[in-house]
Length: 314
Image 1 (tube, rainbow, N blue to C red):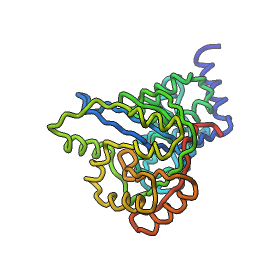
Image 2 (image 1 turned 90 degrees about the vertical axis):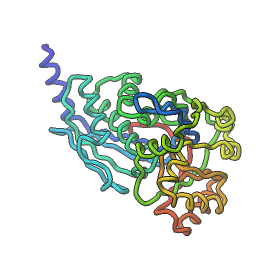
Image 3 (image 1 turned 180 degrees about the vertical axis):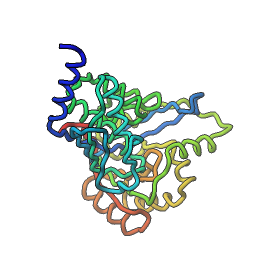
Image 4 (image 1 turned 120 degrees about the vertical axis):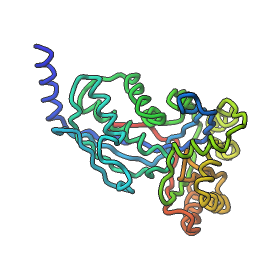
C-alpha cells in the first residue's frame, strides 16, 4: 500500500469515527511567583497550579473542514474561528501526522471566560486529546505535552491536572502531592482582564526594583501535601495581584466581602479578574458564596473542590 493510499484509508476511517468528548478542569494558582521580564518578553515563573472541579467539555466529530461551535456561559466572548486555541490544537496535531484537520469541535463552557482560570487553555488541551483519540494518531504523552507547550503556558497543566509546579513560562511541570480535598469559592467579575495587560502592569509597577527569582514556597508545598487548608491559606500568594487590582480596583471590594464572610484566604486567580476564596469545608463554601452574591461585588459565584483530574475522555 502506498503512503497516499494509507493516508486516504486513515482519513476515510476517521470520517466515520464516533464523536469523542473530553472533559477538562479549570485551575487556580495557589502561588504565582513572577520574575522580571526576559528578553523574549515572557517572565520566568514558579507557578503552583491546582486543578479545580469546574469543567469545560470539547466534543470532536468528523467533518469536511475545521469548524468551531460553542454553548454555555459567556460563549459570545470566545472566538469561533481558527484563532481559538482549540482550533490551533487540532491544526498542530494534524500537521505533525500529515493529515487534514477536518473536525467539528463543539465546546461546552462552564469555566469562566477570560477569568484567570485557564478556560481557553483547558479547551486547547481537551481538543488535542479529543482529536488524538478521534484520529487514532497514537501520539505519546510527551508529544501531546510538547504540543500543549507550543500552544500556551497553561495548556500542559490543563492536560495533566491534579497539582503541579510550573517553571519556565509555566509549561515545565513537576507533579505535586496533595493530601486532601480543598474547598473553593470563585467570584466571577463583569468583563475580563487581558493577561498581557496584567503582565505589562506588573512590569510597570516593578520597574526599577530588584525582582527576585521566582521560587515555590516550601511551606505552601508542605500545606498542599498535608491537605491542611488553614496552612495553605496562610501561604497563598499571587505576584500579579497588585497589577490586577491596579487595572481593576473594584476587585478589592470583592476580596474584602469574601474575607468578611469567613473565607480562610482570598486572592486574585492568576491574572484575574476572577477572585478565589479558600474555605474550610463545603458548608463554609455555601455561606461565603451566598455572602458574595449578596454583596453585589461580583456577577456570579461558583463553588468547587480541588484537586481535579486533568483532561479525560468521557
